[in-house]
Length: 185
Image (cartoon, rainbow, N blue to C red; front, side, top):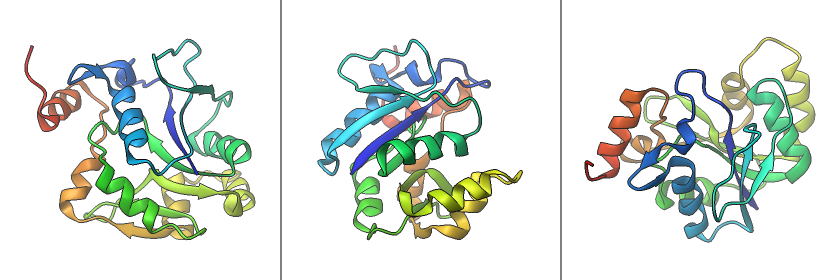
């Protein structure tokens, strides 16, 4: 199975994937965490950034122009089966990844935090849901509803839920640095 990190330009925090978390770009930190688990045949970044280059990271271009659903459909076509990971989850750790991977038995699974929120970018997708997702994409609905109904839910306890912290603002970035134990510069 592959691990695929999704990255597109953020409107709220431009360039966030390359922002420093404890001495390395956020997305590189996620990439390295996935590699260290040993669960994946391949780890790659699936990016809409035209010029993204990160030393030591495999990057494939996401040529879609639309929503996350479009990117997921494209990735399913390209990779068949993969763990989808958000490129803005810098606190993600091996224990959390292990719980998701070990609960995968050929049926798509999605992580759910302790508050009940599904995280479509910490989920395992496969080609068995392609047609349903394509049909669903023709409506105005969001990916959260689809994965919440169609995927088996893996509910994380509050400790592991904290690993799903997304960075979307400068305040989030500061908090992620603090939670990651980064030294102040």
